[in-house]
Image (cartoon, rainbow, N blue to C red; front, side, top):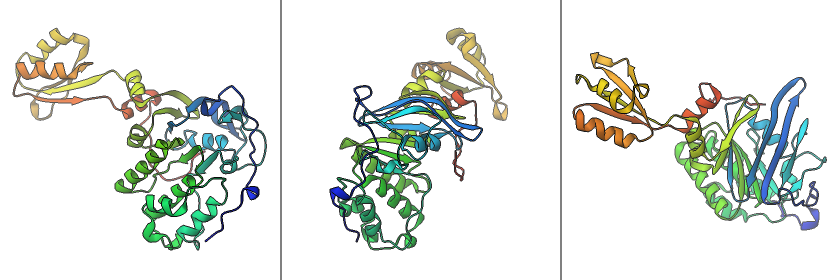
Length: 337
């Protein structure tokens, strides 16, 4: 197994001394613009991540998530803007955000493991790059890889390799961990196991910036998130706030052949709130937009006990569609800029 390097052997920080501005934030990004030749991938993006927070970047492939992460972690130099980590402005210097003085670690969206190294050797190598790494055996156990500790990376399943990649970001025990689509390729059980690992690290005070195109992951994991679309940050806030701000409340859909029910609903809820819909099997169907779906359901149940009543509460996906006007994030393969 790889030897843990001494403190004097570790890379020195490429960030300047701490400034008062942004010291309360683990990460502050201002006016960030990233260009590839004539193409602008990220356009004047600004956000902050509080210490101990999980902050998400939500968007389709190509929205600018990976480019934002690359700039934040020092993997590329932005055309404009400023990035500060733990209140310190990242200066021009060697690229490679994983080595920002032990302040930050990264799991890229796409990277390769050394196929001939075992799980233990892989994490031992990564641990040697940080001043205060987590104990490798404990992390292997936590990620459910104990039985594979001496297995070469090439012999692991796809899900096990993805967990090992997550472990390479967590082993540094850094205050800020950046994860670019960390659960891609994991089955539902493994995905929730990964979420649990991230939550345990957060309970110890670790801050996370993660990108995702999965709505469930964004809602489950993120204290706050930003919606990116075509390189621009459209909105940010808690998932609940984004849903509240960008959607029109709940919808109660009623299927009933009871005469006069739709007209009575218009009189009670208002004509603008009731919308006729094409009914299947000849049964009339209409919907009611309301902020209080429980009361609407009770009203219909009292007047039409045999009606088929269904409630759709607005979701983060609804809010995303409202913000971007697209068909939503796609879980397609392929890198993004």
